[in-house]
Figure 1 (cartoon, one colour):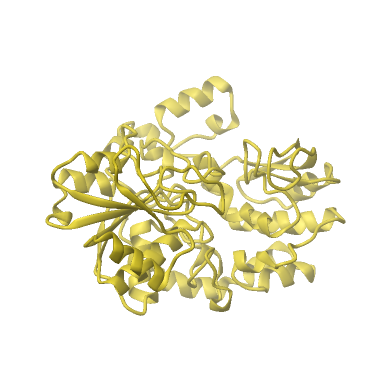
Figure 2 (figure 1 turned 90 degrees about the vertical axis):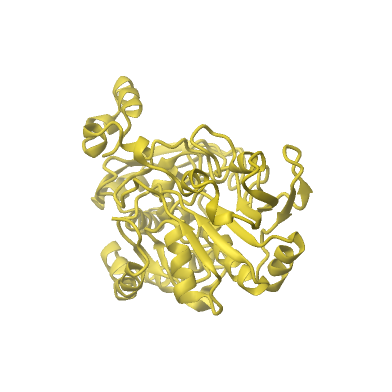
Length: 416
């Protein structure tokens, strides 16, 4: 593991964790590393909001849109005479974050600022453009913390809002934040357009390895039929190999089941269990790290460990979800323990866990709606696993498409 802050390193040492024993790298050599990073918002504010001068501004954001001292940027901007903030647009879970997965807050006036808050969740195209028109904004700003996975819906909120802003004749400004699991590589299968949904609009990889500003440039350059007038305010001091703890920024859960950066580290692989009848750990304190179902015992963890997947071990685990699948029931399964995040491949790990779950538990089933196909972007993963393919064979099945996407992606990368 690399880039741990001094506070994290000391805490890990005191707890005697395995993570501390494997910690090396640049953060230990440079304790000021996180202090050098400035987010897109920090750079925008430092400029006196120059990019927004003379504009009526609306912002798409959620609880992750905070400053380093954990003030919400809407509160900061509303109190600053240098910017004319007139509207807020709330995504899934809402602007202030009061809704669970698949929910939003609806339209309301924000009690803290009096600003109108418009609901964008599950809205796209002309209906969303009409909301932007109704709000009377000139420029739409986007500032939401992403987690690096294609099926994490905030990047498609970004896409939909860019498309709607183009239809409504609005400018669009993206304030960048770190990809918490680094921007080193694109991993996993590529979405096929016939499987496009709100968990994947366009043909990008399952783990995209980009920041939201880079994604906005990609969307504008490759996928929007009518490009939007786009400006991106990049970070300074961020490197592609930085994990989130190198940023020095506080972590705010972008959604209720993304409590820590460690959750984000495994999410692009283990979220695939949403497409099965197993619990993906919702309703526990370790969502996407705990996986299981009634009737599973120690055999699954043993089979997963036998795969020899890099950077990760699996522990036999039992848990009782407080909501979602198997609510209130004790189930058996595995806990995913990332031992070396530099070597860990979350998508390969997710595939290995699906294969071994199916081989060791007779009750394994895909969700009847084939949700797994929407998550992976095609029928390929499901049909290959059903046919008995191994990890290398499944992963190899998407390599040509992944290589082609990597070539496109490379044109839009903005950081070393």
